[in-house]
Image (cartoon, rainbow, N blue to C red; front, side, top):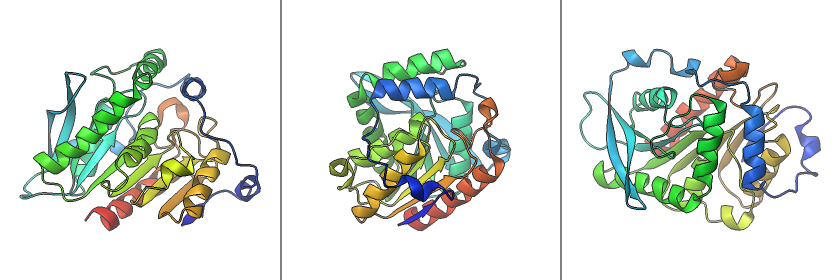
Length: 281
């Protein structure tokens, strides 16, 4: 496993021994990280309106008797089954930014399904996002059904022979949880600064490669927790590539709140492109 981080990171390895934070503590940290944010589009999604892709809203799951609608995107003029990617929202919900990211992923040659974990709600303020995320986290069994049915939809309705997951912030944590829920089925998982699970019993069954992308200055997902996550995966012999970008904060891949770090965001995206190409094609 390869781990990249700042010069001081190695000093934290020995002290990284805490378990993942309780959901309430995690929610409080996300509130602090996003206090001044607005859900504006990421620079990484610029120009998606010129991509040769077609998107549509589809029902991909039924959870607790309620149909769930996501955004499905495929490249134009491509016949036959393609690898699939489950695209998981930030804490804002399934907004235009996440739809654009699904389009950008589809343009690489994938069937991308942007899932909805907020029952159709999309936040426009941090207060709304905090409330929606809190409501969603109260029923994590429903969220697990949501993402596992997304996998079943891609493999069943679109004949995807391989499926990966990707998520940012709240969705980064749920990209990992998707992997934990589908330890042998999922073929690749990308985690952008998401809540981590460092319990070896939860991580030991994972069979897919993992790409983790984090910011060294992220107080919401502390560096020591990322290092513990990387250490546990390494000790378990997992195929994981964990990068911690120096001078990058939470949400470094999205300019909301002034945290956008162009250098880190572009490098992270290049890693995502290569990672999916190596493990899904």
